[in-house]
Length: 506
Image (cartoon, rainbow, N blue to C red; front, side, top):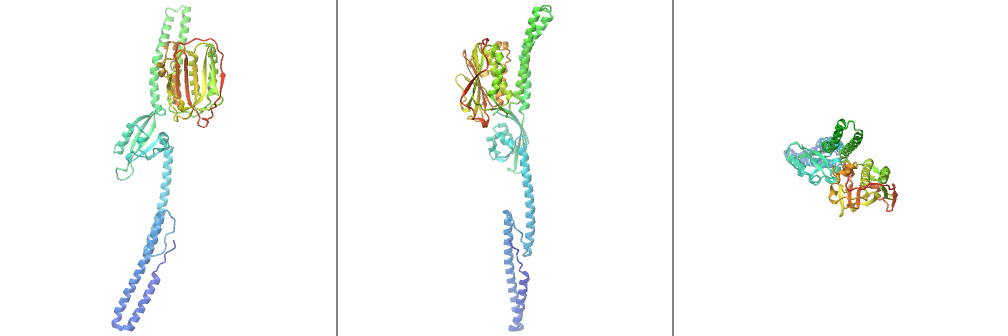
């Protein structure tokens, strides 16, 4: 916009000239008697004309200033009017300074807002801002990862359905003080959270719509599980160690008393004491292993594992034990099997427990087969003799899974026992399980490892025929379609003599 032109100097000279001419003309035409009224009329008309011109120019300048201010409000750039009437100049210059100041402050405020958003998203703990009507106004990255990206601008109840949490939020929005609530999220693995709800008034004067609730969530799963594990460890250890400890004390008292000089009894008792002490050691090791697994169960692994390689290494490790019990080990797997997402050591422990149980309870001169396959998650289901006893269905039922099925030809397990096989210390035949060195924790360890892997365990068994334990593991995303259809049979050991089992799991 160009500079405004001031009309004052030239206009004043023109008016003065007209007045002088009017006065001279009046004297010449009307004389002294009528000259004064005519002169006054001319002065009044000239003044009115000047006022009209000045007002029109001022209105035009004001319109120009208003247009310039509107342009600034719309974000346009332009120079302020620097010439014109005094009123125009007195308005334009302060407005220009105010605009520059506000622009600088807005830029600083935007930088601060961006920094605050980045800080909130960098927080490890979920943070949610809830406004009137329980509407989620903001959620940081941790909260969106926990409850979903679409939780913003929706009712909090659509993402978080814990009644105690909703009640606390409603109370704080209604004017109550801060609240603290503990709640759990059951899927995909149960997690415990401590929720703190604090009020915040975003306006200087309280109003119904100006109060918001700030929700911060703290994951206390590890803390609660460690407390529960300590209690469980004491209870389980005291229960399971009571029998071997009583046996050891009894044999020690016998050796110190009546059998002090009985060499034959001493050797026999020492052998029994060694067996009981070994069982106590295995029991403590399994309890500690189970405690470590439960502590990390809510944190899914992220490594990649070659299942066939791990299964083959387990079969190689059990080769001598299988030969000693007349068991033939065989691995059946496709030519190509996708890697799975998991913890290599823990998955190895799963395969060890399943194959070890199969070797314990298979008939002599029989075969234990480990079958690896690639399957669709939607196809995993139950049947007449099938029980899902551990783990959860994958988050996406149609995702590709790698199944590892361990099949033995033993006495089988009655269907009534299947749902409880993964409970701690549950045994179908407790006496036989203890005689074979079982602690009753093997399948419980398998269950918790598969829970951590978001995997699933099914058990199919028929009395007199045998049992099949199948673990379904999620395939890695970019290799889910890599499994081949062809299978290759790989023998792992030669059959030798072994004993039969009456049934059970340990």
